[in-house]
Length: 161
Image (tube, rainbow, N blue to C red):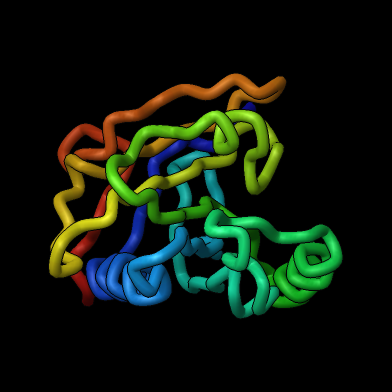
């Protein structure tokens, strides 16, 4: 049984993610991150972020997000040691939040149930959750689009405590 696809993230971490991804685009290329935390039958809770260029300095050199396996496997081991898992990934697209062909054919985590978030490149880094693309990988290069809106949707941005 797959965990509930809901993604729970505190507002401050969401703002850190969106602002930092947009800063890292440098106005020229995509940028991305893995969202780390825990999965349960009640959803996923994000507790940390790791940006692709922290794993590989060349992650954006082609203009799109690419991570070679040599960079990912040591990260997975570190996560296991910390008791965390990748609960989702996020990256910035230049115009909108739709999946590209490359996104559909090459998921960052090719495991059924994985969530991919696509953020459009917003002016001034102000984000509307309704503009976010949220996609669940079903396996065999099949995806399900989810409503990212906070109320009744999959993305749940929570007030900090």
